[in-house]
Every structure is written in C-alpha cells, then in structure tokens.
Length: 239
Image 1: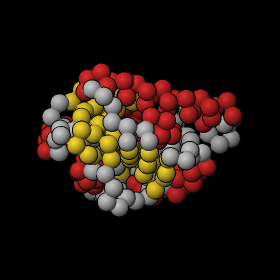
Image 2: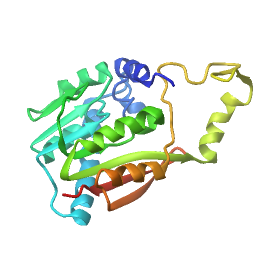
Image 3: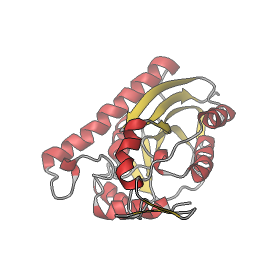
Image 4: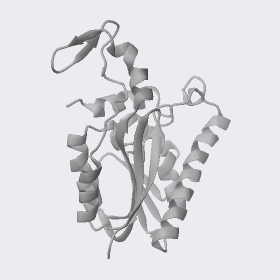
C-alpha cells in the first residue's frame, strides 16, 4: 500500500496551496494577494452551499463544533469556523498545517491527530480519493463514530473513472514494465513520491458504514474531477 502521507508531506512543503486547488495561479511562484483572497472565497462559497443544503433537507444546522478531515491549508476549515463556535482541521502534512495556522482565527485549530473528541459536523472534501481504500475505510469508520447524535455530514468519495481519465494516463502506460507491484514507464515511474494518487471506493460499503453509524437518510450529488467520478454525501445522524 502506497505511503500517501509522504506524498502530502512533500506537497505541503513545496506547493501547499496548489496541492489543495491545482490551478497555476495558486503555485508559490504565481500567487498574489488577490489570488489568495479568491482561494479563501472558494472555501466560503463551498461551505455556505453545503450548510444551506443540510439545513434545507435536515433542519436546523448544528453549529457547536466541526471537524474538517484532510484540511490542507484550511480553505474549508476557515469557512467552517465562520459558521460554527469551534472548528478543527485535521491533516498529516506538516507544511500545510504550518500554513493553515498562519491564517487561523481564534476559534479554529489545526492538528495532526485527534484524542477522544466528538463533533457536530464532519466534513471531508476531495480527500479520501487520495487515500488507499484499505486504510480509508478504517479512517472513515472512526470519523463517523465521532459525530454526535444529530450531527451533520458532508463527505466526498470517488467511485469510478471514465475514458477521459484513462486517456490522460495512456501516454505513461502504453510502454513499460509491470513486476506485480510497480509499473515502470519508459520515461518515469508511475506513483513516485510526491504525486497525487486517485483511488476509488465501494459505494455499497460506504452506505453500510454510514447506515451503521446512524446516517439513514442521505442526499447525494454527483462529482466529476477530470474523469474521476464520485459523490458528495450529505446527511444527519439520528438522535
């Protein structure tokens, strides 16, 4: 199983903002104060939409405490702090956490691990797609258990890839060598440290897990990131 923690530690040290939103204007060499404000604005807009959807379908929004899993530099966590009394961002990248803490409001904290805390809102967007499912299922099981009764969920997972993604990968795959563990291209090694891996999850297993943890009614939105299809799941834990 690939060590994706190392990947994100490297991305956090080199390109913390680009690692969150992969647009050229968010590279260290290009970023400006205006681009940085746009970066934070995307987080506010995104989370306002999620909160509105949860309120519309599940009633009054729980705003005591929130957890943003895979927070990166805090693009979404910072916005969650504007909606909740307390927000916590959790990430494994020291570089991204250091950047997040530079911009942290007083009610927002950033950590690399959790104790026994529980939360009223669990959020994780474009994160599990970069975690090998064997590990991701265990992490998600623990996170869902930390949501308080009546708490909210906004969770993104990837499910399958279409031809556009495979076509993008084809130049690296059409000539190479597979030894049963690692594919070596004529030009480079697919999966080198520091890259963004994309993993797919089993929807039936995710539904079983959310149901077991008390999320019996879910709203699901389709997502497509460059041919990697998935869903964002919104729900409310039973009391």
